[in-house]
Amino acid sequence: MKPFHADAQPTGGARAWAELLRLPALFTVPGDALAGAAAVAAAPNSRTLLAIGSSLCLYEAGMALNDWADREEDAAERPHRPLPSGRVHPAAALSAACALTAAGLALAARAGRPAFTVAAPLTATVWAYDLALKRTPAGPAAMAAARGLDLLLGAAATTGHPREALPSAALLAAHTLAVTTVSRRETTGGSTPAPLAALATTVLLTRRLTRPVTSATVPAPSRSRRRAAAVSSPAPHTPAEPPAPLTGVARRTPAPWRTRPRPRAGQGDAVVPRLALGAAYAATAARPYLHAALNPSPPLTQRAVGGGIRAVIPLQAALAARAGAGATALLVAALAPLGRRFARTVSIT
Image (cartoon, rainbow, N blue to C red; front, side, top):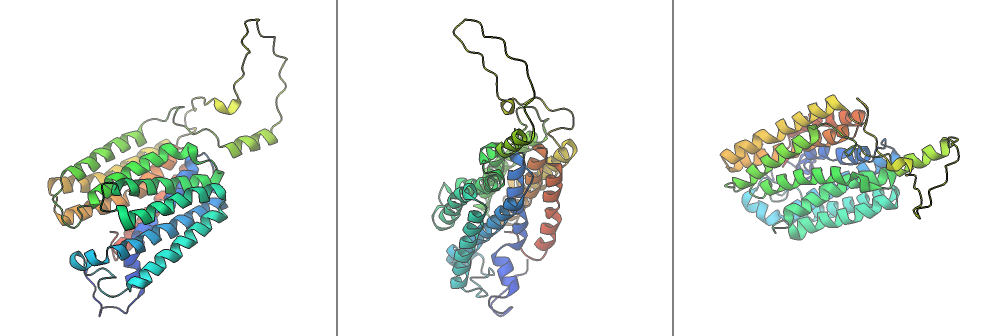
């Protein structure tokens, strides 16, 4: 990307703010909430949209705060960035971070108490990463936790019960951990183990995403769906249960929602989208990781980080397809071309 200087554009111009907020990376955010809704076997609703809005605000707050915290380092290593080049004032970036944080928390509160309960630690993690943890060994883990919490935010907003989305959040967090570890040497290069570890992570995640879905991996119906089904469907008439034998042990009949029968073919799993999106995820992330491992120069390391960020979208879509939400998966996947289009003019890293 061609460098920009203070005399190239007016201070605070749209292009400068697009660079500061990493506009192409913004398209990787809505899929978190949508994948979270899919993970709890629920269709997106108005509260899911509020969660997406909250995620967008908190993500952009983190971007602005990141450059504000790194302004001195960027003056030496990336003088073309908006803050060191003078195109955005540091006070404006910090004010934007605060305003976006407040907006993100407000939207989460509108989505309900469970969503706000997840958004609060997500916000704390974002600010802690940018201001204190980024250059510590805990930095990649903090970033991974933030991305996992963002997926849980969508689940919490949609149904109020995010626990069922923990496996999907863990897979997304694992990918984020790998990308963030590679990005720590983005400007200096020289690290082969990090891209190799990221490549191995990509292979393992791809295998997990593309393997056949069994009854153990199909999410059970959410509690709201079970309650609605119980209200709308009258209980079938069953004959009286014969008395239990006098063994001192009472007979138990398991609740119907606690049993998870193996799904029939085509039920509970969007097979074709899952395989295609899993392959797209691997193709997007693996190749630049391999190149950076073979030649860990700063340009190839930056390209690996960009590939890892772009791979988030097919990963989110594959997670949705794996949960059986084929339409949601295709909707998330449609965000990838938009991100690539904007990345031609604004750097994603």
